[in-house]
Amino acid sequence: MPRDREGSFEPQLIKKGERRFTGFDDKIIAMYARGMTVREIQGYLEEMYGVLGSPDLISQVTDAVMEEVREWQSRPLERLYPVVFFDALRVKIRDEGTVKNKAVYLALGVVPDGTKDILGIWIEQTEGAKFWLRVMTEIKNRGVADILIAVVDGLKGFPEAITTVFPLTQIQTCIVHLIRNSLEYVSWKDRKGLAAELKTIYRAETAQGAFTALEDFSQGWWGQKYPPIAAMWKRQWEQVIPFFSYPAEVRKVIYTTNAIESLHMQLRKIIKTRGHFPNDDAAVKLLYLALRNITKDWKMSAREWKSAMNQFAILFADRFMPQLQ
Image (tube, rainbow, N blue to C red):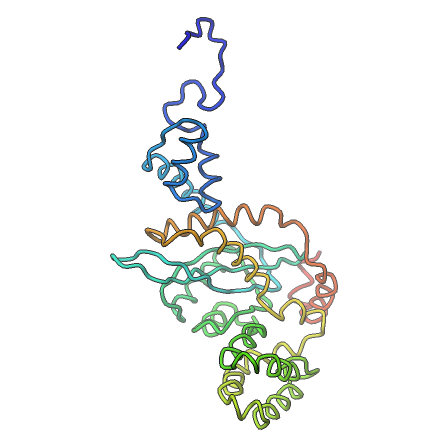
């Protein structure tokens, strides 16, 4: 190899004085964030750059992200979130020698100007009031003073926990989740007809009108054929009826957790090639890096937010207006 006697040669891949592949750190992290495993990254580096990076070295580079994750997870949050969506993503993680199907919970908040923000990532094997109380307390300690509406999908123990920490928050069950859960009881040929019948419930003008439609459904042909559906709606009715007290502009915002489900869909594309994660930190690390890529373009508010914001200012004047000054 020719000597660089004058010291004029500047390496492009691995800079002078570097003992390990720090020049590749960003490339390794970028590949890891797109769902590539350690072995796949190792093969890519060898094929493209002729560099043999050991799995331990690649793991060290990606593990360094955990410090950034901890800083992000404890960063200060906004004082007010008009709407926060809570939902779970199921991920296979090795725990105590066995692979378990754990729930990874994400909180997607909408700030007063309509832009979105991920509040955090939490992993718990079983949900419950104790777990959610810890999450709500953490959010409050990070600066959140108020949440106007929390949209959830029947999370166990959630109502008790959030009203303990944020007593004024209204809890809204995701209507789309409720419809989807209802259709699980229905044969494929009956789904279209039953879905049309359910529209009379959630498209009612008032809560009383919706309950009347639910009673009619329960006593009608569909309700008699599939009795668990009406029973399920009635069990969750207290978290359904807040929806009917809002005008159409606000209903469009809180109608569904589709915003966070769309986020989950993007995350599933990244983690689908993995059989399982070796531990909780590995799962959080990849999800954080994936979220960092996904959310970097979140700069615009939703198209319907301006109309909703005016309604929030009217409905929650004493809680919402100070944030707009």
